[in-house]
Image 1 (cartoon, rainbow, N blue to C red):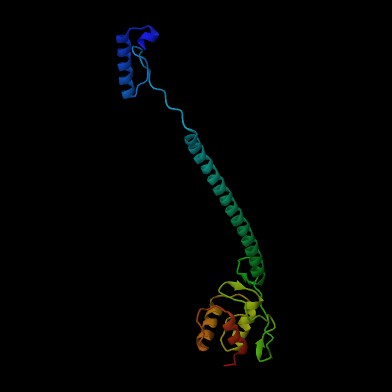
Image 2 (image 1 turned 30 degrees about the vertical axis):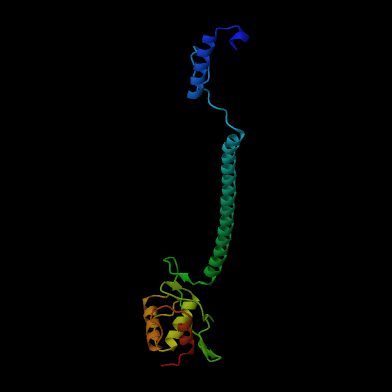
Length: 201
């Protein structure tokens, strides 16, 4: 090569040895030229695709999770709205059928008992209920009906005023004890049955 290029063979031999050393060390460059920091290798197409694929998958998973959570929240909101509407309807029906509660502004009323027996049951002419639940502090004609039936059964509830007070409660408890019912002072279906079918004592 020295003959072809017209160069000094010793110099070419030294350059060849330096190049071989650099090649063995992994450095590429020319002898005598300072080498700069190696530039980072360009990413392969596979590496670029790998880094791009994960964020897309995360975005897709996040979007799916967002859609599912919004759908679940919407379904819960619709279900709650329906439940609230149904509860409001139930409360409206219950309030209409429930006797009033005692208040200070109420004027005392005295009811008249008109006892009669129909189909083996006693009625006082104030209410035909057999299901309405009456408890302490309730007022109204249903309470007066129960008071009339208590008096007919031989247990005095006090005045027939339609107010479920302490005397009416203790009279109800006496009838419940006598008829082997649950003694709670509350008039429910079982106590109504006992009052309507009771024989005079």
